[in-house]
Image 1 (tube, one colour):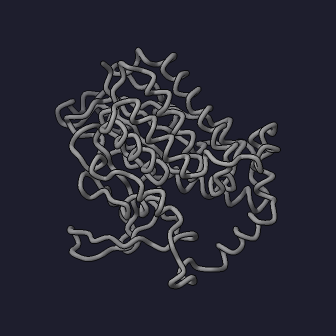
Image 2 (image 1 turned 45 degrees about the vertical axis):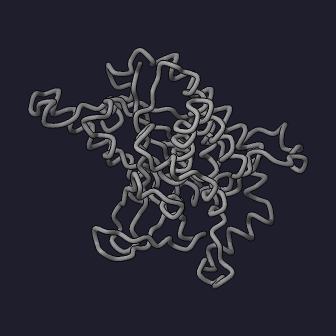
Image 3 (image 1 turned 135 degrees about the vertical axis):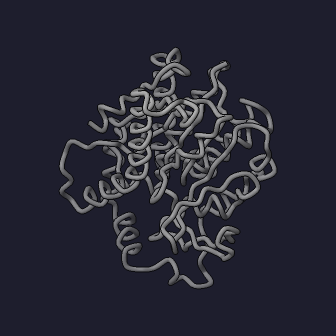
Length: 341
């Protein structure tokens, strides 16, 4: 049995790619997920995966993930979306991005604070998250789960785990400040109630919770924000999209750079394995597909795109297993020195 840790990025509706990756990994009976750290959509996927595994093993995990994305818009009356089925992802992204409803909604979110709604405000993700079984999510059974959010006051990351994980903790992890009101949760370390925004600003996701001695050395990052885009963004939508991607990848880059530094010290004999953990880093991604999409398809859970993302995630998971299963427990498959060279 090969044991791995999963690091699940946030990225709105693009988290359906991670749904597919997890579905693909569940095909591998000899791979066990020991721990999951997740932000935003990654936190939702991680909670669904853990709840399902505790409830009914691999079949339960599949059922919980399917149920989550049914609630997020992946399944439903798709007759209005049928005309999009023949389009490529880039065409669907453009059709949403330049549609009047999206343009109006995007402009509205830049001019109007989510606090302007007063008593009429309700986080639209709340009924989705409320359906989780938190007895299963908070139990010591199954994979360890870590949910990342950003403290508005201090700008620091907070990682929720065990009984700290709740509807509010997951909503905080997915709280984009231009769309949602900050989520307030008591913090025992500060002794005060703190407001939280999306965890992607400080950890997308945080990797350090996976460095405990009781967890395996392999960290598999499921990346849904493309690391590179060759073309310089020129339209307002393209510029905003790339700003979003860079800001939400920056925290991951910082931690990977730190891992690279420690691994170099271990290789040079300047540290011993007992002093610092050896980490094998892997990544499952489809940057070609994600380069075809945009912030529009992150915020609008179009059923056609969600299913295309799930299929792409399954395919990416199977490619990774086919290419690198033997590397698990033996070496990194991400060349960190080249990445930061």
